[in-house]
Image 1 (cartoon, rainbow, N blue to C red):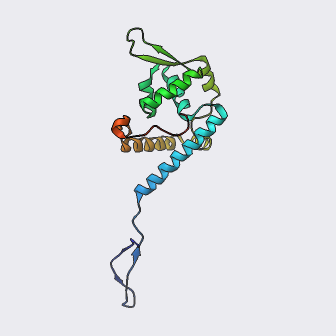
Image 2: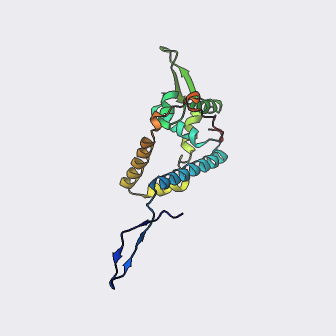
Image 3: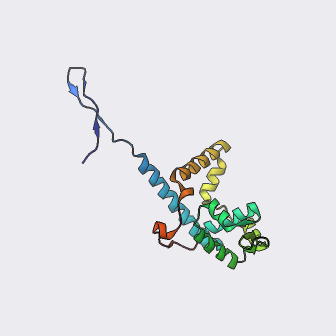
Amino acid sequence: MSTKSIRPARKASRGRVIKIESPAPVRHDLRVLRALRGITRAVSLYSRKLYTRQRITSPQLVCLLVIAEEQSITASEIARRVHLSPSTMVGILDRLEANGLVVRQRNRRDRRTVSITLSRAGRAMLRKAPSPLQDGLAAALSALPETEQATIADSLERVVELMGVESLTFDREKTGLEAERMMPT
């Protein structure tokens, strides 16, 4: 069934009345959803490629980059910055620690606080690591003017904000979410 709308009739030059059909309204919500699905798929495929070549996933690499920025940071702060659940963050840190890329150290003043730092191997990994972005995207972005790069980043950050990612709960009991069944993070 067509959902085309009909514009009001108007008179043609010879006195005939013609009806002009206008195209269906643009569904921006579907355009956004398709774009997000495309981005999600591309990120997942690149993460698999990265894991095959470097033995590290995109989420692991992004976490290493965040740790490198701060030099010492808590797991909950990393999780907040990269939009991962605390339980996912623990799994990533377990794998990074098992691979000798990070060191966990309990705070002497407050034993509840654990700081994460890069190991020598972690710093070496970052020196040789590719961009956490898909190769083609990283090259295309760097070729754009700075203002356009900033506009793209601002727009994507706005999408994250509109989606309410910061306010999402990651409590499986409250959300009913199953454990993530993708590749290792």
